[in-house]
Length: 108
Image (cartoon, rainbow, N blue to C red; front, side):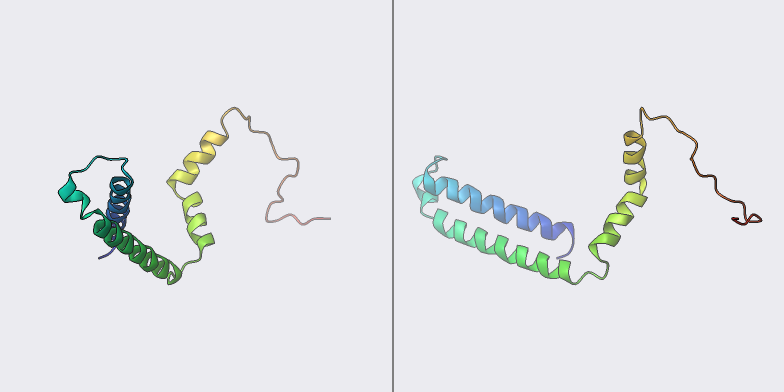
């Protein structure tokens, strides 16, 4: 399994464990036949969620691009440009105090 499918399995396992725990505690009313299976469902779901989190952590550590590069890619992308445009609303553009020298000019 790769990508979104793995995330779906992890979320379903976590949901199953939480639902089974709620049934065991008595928050949710369940029939007696189902109540007998709840501890096994809770353990199986919790184990699946734990295994999925371990696999996700291992795959994250194998990435070749550091976290900073991923952040930089976000800010340089469409969403980052959009956020900067929104952040700049209400500010007026001013000319810089220092002018940039042309290629033919040299500083004195």
